Image (tube, rainbow, N blue to C red):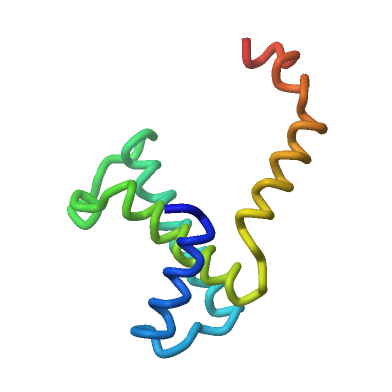
Length: 108
């Protein structure tokens, strides 16, 4: 699936099953909530915190997909073409960071 297809599929799902998009600020809050859930799972899986019973059946991929879903909703609502945005972001990083990380002693 391409990013463009994902944006289209999310839009179709919202219009078919979701009634309408939540407003942008509500979706921003939901995005923060989903990032928090991802963070909670990452901290338990890769960090020092132990799992709680309520965390044991959660999947990292599902939490990441929840974050992506809401980000796509926000992109659709605000007219952002994520494919073009990502291409432009790569261009920015290629110019700004062409040798930055290669020269970083901390990464060697």
